[in-house]
Amino acid sequence: MTPELQAATPADIADLRQLYYAVYGPHYPAGLGTDPAEMARLIQDPHTFWLVARRPGTGALVGSAAVHGELVSRIGRLEGLAVHPKHRTGGLAGALTEALCERTLGTGLLDSVYATVRTISAGPQRVVARNGFRALGILPNAVDLSSRESLALYARHSSGVLDRRVPVPEVPAPLTPLLRAVEQSLGVSYADTRATAPLPAPERPPAGRLETIEAPAFVRRRFRERFPDADSWFYPLHTPNVLLMPDDGHFEVYAYVNRTGSYCALIAAHPGPAAAAAWLEPITRTLTRAGAGYVEALVPLDRHDLLSAFLAQGFIPSALYPAMRAEGDGFHDYAVMTHTNEQIDFRGIVVDGPLQPYLDSYASAWASTYLPTLKVAS
Image (tube, rainbow, N blue to C red):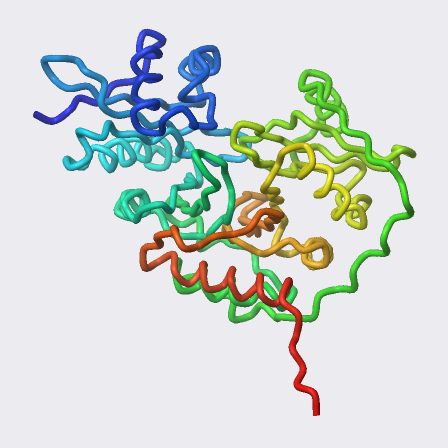
């Protein structure tokens, strides 16, 4: 019998925790499947659409998925997609995904929904692809579950959104393979975008100490004071919990660090990202020492200067999210720049066909960044 899809309620929390344990074991890094308080908050959040699947008759909970939306950015994140191991052959994951997309994208509530999916098998990639999601990139070493895993980034856009992208005049040349992969995956064009040499690396900062403040409530208050207007920063669906600044306090960097999954997102810098550009290497090193084996940043594709700064500090262009941010009548593209100090092992990764160009693009960019150019002695 076909499982019934219902809105999640607080009464489902105990069953949901058992489901996520059955699917992911004890290493699931998100509070959505492990923290009762966070689960209750999300279930009651008017911007979160959480569905569960129950077997008719027995009422056993066999599936779950949610889209957490942000109405300001009009972006949603598909998360917590889980189907009990005994019920994975009936298309339940696809049914949950499609139902959530209809309630968000289909109603015009959101402009796009993205998902990060595991690459230990092709199954999760095929589920989202069958439901209209398209590959946007690969995030190596992005999360620590039972071991370090790479994730794939996928997104689905509302009708007409991709047609309203704002043209990008130029990008640093190392991003060219990534642009070609996106053209192949989404059918968009970057034919008019010039590939130019990256700008020189920012002058290295004088020796100095970075102070790390890990007081989540204080960091959130300070962040809201520094960025009262969402137009002055952009990192949807992430709230900072760590603040970094040098001794002289001439800039502040806000980050979200997830120690369970051992990853970090650089969210914003005050008074602006250029002020911290020369400090990217010590910032990344500090975050790595704090337990973040993977660091990512979301950079506007039209910011040649910022992309050059990240490239100079060893960040790799790993994914590209076209038409991510609405501004006026158009949509702006964003690149995901990533950094990991841990060894990348692609032997266990499984990529479905649409994801292969992104794996090739990443491997090429990594090699050009970290492998020396060999010269033959005459």
